[in-house]
Image (cartoon, rainbow, N blue to C red; front, side):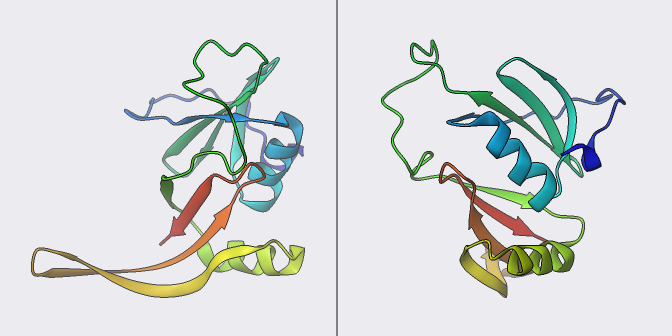
Length: 139
């Protein structure tokens, strides 16, 4: 799991950093680092801080009496939300997912979204992490 380990501290904090509660932190770290390509910056018991390009991400091990839980955790976690993350090498990620047999929620494809009359085209694929959070990786 240490292939994407950085001992360099984060020098610029992102203005928005999702913190996802996960059911099995070691398993989630394995997927986020080895499969999705995130870099682990630091960890402490029950917590990890990661990044992918300029995206920053926190994972926290679910606790039975979690102070910040707004309701019961039921798989899939994060229903109703997807996280768009710019990936530095979407083709490599896609190849790794396919080689791993990792299920794709939506296959790699090109989509065009309108901002008023201005089209924006991006390549994207969607996967769910081990707890069901929906991640949309884009270029």
